[in-house]
Length: 417
Image (cartoon, rainbow, N blue to C red; front, top):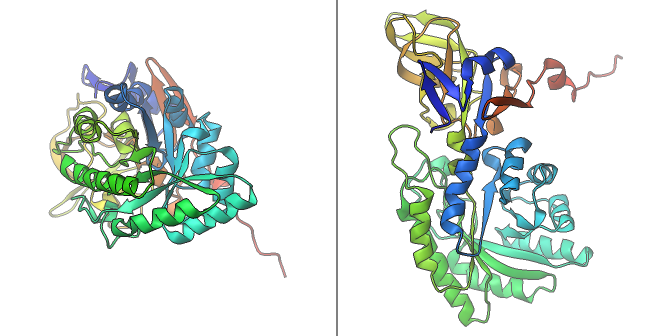
C-alpha cells in the first residue's frame, strides 16, 4: 500500500503526515487515500478494458458521498441495497443507468424510486419481489429490467456471517428453480429479464468457490437459451478478499483472467460488484491511546476508538494490523490487548499485539476503508468519527465529526402533564 508508508519512522498518508491529520481533525478518525481508491478501481478496470462490462461498486462497503464521487468520475456503476444508498449515489453524481439494486427486502417506495430514476436492473431474490416489481412498474407504465439472483449452494469458505450462497442462507433463489422463475418473469408484461446474478459471500481468499459459482451460472445461461430466453449480462457479484494479516487472496487481475476464459465466446456483458477489494486497503482508522492498564496477567491499551467505530473485530473476530503512527518511541515493547472504552468485553480492536507505546500516542488500524464507518453506531451515546480524504499533499474533511446535539436532534421529550 504505497499510499500509507513510513518516512523517518512517521506514518504518512500519501504526502501528508498522519500526525498532522490527527492534530487538525482529532481522533477517532477515518482517513482515506484518493490514490488508493483509484488504484482499487483500476485493478478491476484494466483487466476488463477489452470486454463489455460494468463495475458496480458495492456501496455498503463505504458509502461516503466523496468516496462515491471519486469512483463515479472514473466511470463506476454501483451495487445498492437500499433507497438511502441510491440517493447517496445520485447525490455523488453516479449514473442511475449503471446501478443494480440488490437485497432481499426491497420496499414498495424503494422500487418506485429506482424505476423513476431509471436504474440498470433489479437483482430479484424472490417471487414475491418479482410480483411487487411488476405491480409497481405497471402503475408507472414502464418496464423493469431484472436479473435473478440465484443461490448455487456453493460454500464460500469464509466467515459464516458473510457467507451468502448456501441453501440455508436467506439470499437468492434455488438455482434449480431458476428456469421456472425466468419463464414466469418473461410472461409478465412490465418485466424484462436481462441477466443472471450470483453473490456467494464476502472476504473470499480463494478463486475456487467464485469460479464454481460461475460454472453454475453458465450452465443456467445455456439452459435458458435453449428455452428461448437470451440474457444480456452475467453478474458474478463481489466478495474478493483483501490481505488483513496473512491471507493470500488472488488479485482482481488473476481472478478476472480466469473469469474471462470461462465466458469467452459468450455474448454477455460482464457485471461485477466489488466493494471491500476496492476500498478496504485505501483507509485507516486513527485512534489515540488514552491510558495503559496492567493486571496480574494482561496489559491493556485503552484507546479512544471503540466497537461502535470499528465493529468488525467484535462481531467477526476480524484481525486488523495495528501500527504506531510514530515508530520512534523509547517505550518498552509490551504485548497489549487494544481495547475501546465501551462497556462490553467484546469492545476490542486487536488482541495480543506487541507495541512500543505510551499514553497519548497515536495508533493506526490498517485496512479499515471497508465496513468501518458504514457499520458504525452511536452505542453508548458516542459520536461517530470524522472522515478525511487525502489527495497527494491535501487533506479534505468529507464528514465532520458528529456532535451530541446532532445525536439527540431526532428525539423528543414527552409533553408535560
